[in-house]
Image (cartoon, rainbow, N blue to C red; front, side, top):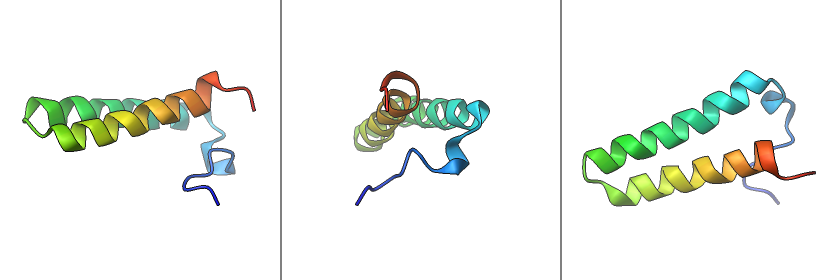
Length: 59
C-alpha cells in the first residue's frame, strides 16, 4: 500500500503538482528560518519526494 498515490487523478493538472512542491519546499525554508530543523527536514523531504515523483521519475 502506498502512503501517497502520486498517480491519483487529483494530481493530473500541472499547476497542482507545481503548487504542492513549491508549498512543501517553501514551508521547509520557513521552518528552518524559525529554528525548527525537524519540521524543515520533514517538509523538505516530502517536497523533494514529490518533485521526484511528479517530474523526474518515468512511470
